Length: 183
Image (tube, rainbow, N blue to C red; front, top):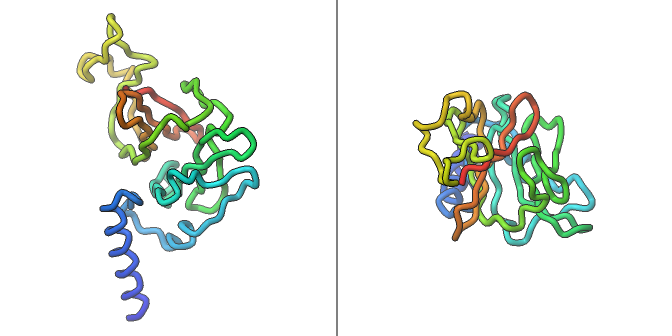
């Protein structure tokens, strides 16, 4: 009974934090959720970006059913921002961007972005790197050929800027990370 109360308290706390935009909580069951949230950085040249210290994303990037932890980090050597991804199955930790480029994204620094959220699985997106209107306008989804739409098989990371139209999604397909420009 005591464990059940602790579990309920943990879930209630996460729901409250979710309402404060400090954490996005996916509702899938993960028995090692607390352990995952308390993971320390695995790379000596990375630190959690102070601007995003309280923000963590919990999502299933690789589709294995286990929640993965995503945190915004900064490389202490080149001062470029990126993402730390701790896969919930505890098999690996990966660092994206922070001085390295990702296919489809020319930036090697995520410092210009201010918002990070979950792009839900089973959604379709228009990749503006592939489909752009004749005058540079953003096409409506129904005007884009089906073979040019990107379908997320798993959750993705939606990254954007507050006062701008710049945004995109990092997602996994066939165990590789990809970027699509969405605005």
